[in-house]
Image (cartoon, rainbow over all chains, first blue to last red; front, side):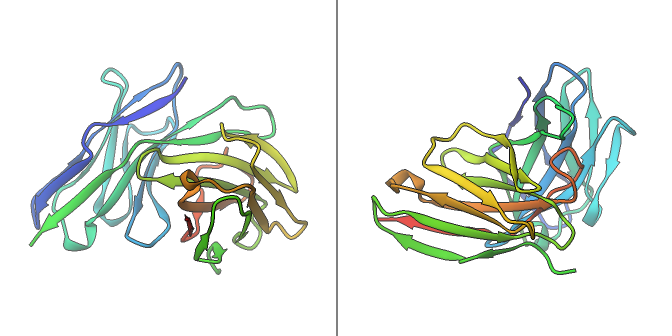
Length: 118
Length: 114
């Protein structure tokens, strides 16, 4: 069964310093992986996605993630944190068997809360 | 294009009651998925509807049900509410189902069960 583990429940960085949010996945075959962000009282927004194309994926707002099969990791990074990056981030794997009707589902990690200190 | 809308945004109910939540997807999207978000369990998949048919379901009891109308709007119903049903319920839409690479989420309905 596919799953994701977010290694840190809370990360705190200073504004202008790099961000690293860690995610490991478990999958019996090549997975589709995503990072979503949730700002307080807002819905989830897709940051980036990996679907077996380039292993280094660039997303919105300067975020990127690298798919490393040997390490089963999909860590999210950003070179310089901004105050507006403070939010909760979710690593997500697409699971389920394709039945011809597109019946996948998304399995979410527990989330990492990112705090940005001025 | 307008985003995914959910109504109501906040709801307070008592144990034993039932509740119906509504989700209007982005225009042209035919798939609607529902998720429950709680501090303890995180985000969990409830079910997905596509063209008025439920085609995927998570591990929730039968008290949780849903339906989709011909205009793709979806409703989720929870009967015999329990305290543990207090959560943020998120709805997400996509053009053709979860198999597509992005789901667009609404702001959620926060349900409190007293």
